[in-house]
Image 1: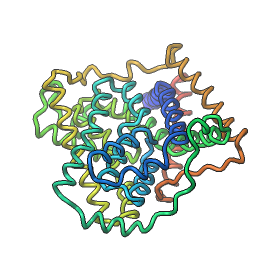
Image 2: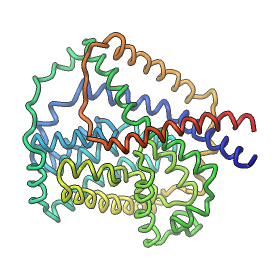
Image 3: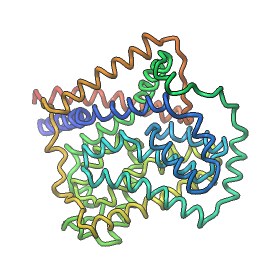
Image 4: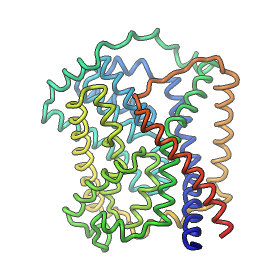
Length: 405
């Protein structure tokens, strides 16, 4: 019993430590994302992505890069762009970019996994778009695309043109909307982040390395020793593990760091991180938007692209002798609460968050702001909410046990 209580305390302390390490990065990313979405984007992108050429793909990639990292927000924005005339592949480029190339995700990856994975995330995000484009040109799903547009119907009329940036930045209304958007970003991810960091702590304390060495075929001799078939198994199992966690990439990063430290290959970890768009909730939403045939086509397209991308990244770093050593990747060695740069950054961004909350809900409480979201499953959302609340009970009790037992 004492052993279980000690592990419980260790699991909770690990979860809190991981979140403390990442908190400033979350806040920085969502501050930037919120400001960009209010001050820069929305209307212009809908008029510049209609042609299937390289130009519209680059624009889709750029607009995705400066967009929100929430999968449900990205799905709704992608649907809107496609419905308003964006080409299918530029819409896919936007979707992949907004979930893989965003600033906040890169910061979190650099904290927990290091520069090789950060490079893999951004280079791999571009490769995902490239391979998806090549697969679409090869398969030519013209009938599916036409049918998907028919399923969406006619778009709503656009609102009046936005004000120039110089006027917006002086507007209290724009800053109020930024504060509300910042709160919305947290509202979209709090359940995923809570569950993801709790799972990471539980895995760290309770799950032995042997479990993952069975789940992911493991040679035990370093990253360079994996055979092609072993790597292929890793990049297939990685998305399956992500599917079972049902949480987005932001919440999955600390778990990815733990998996890497337990011997999963670089390719398997990249596939795991890239898998936030090949899970059932996303499949269901795409089916609601475009029909089941197109939803399964998108699933297959993204799954094949992430497999090719993950393997290419692994072998590319291997050729350059840049693969990190997973046996030395122990994220738990760096965890804890210290008076260091993390402490001061967290305090600074907590103050900035308070200022944005004041703009959004005190100074601008009468300002209306709404962002379209993909239709979530009420049953799933309710389940995730109760799981997240149970996680808080587990974490608080375990945190106390860490200092008592």
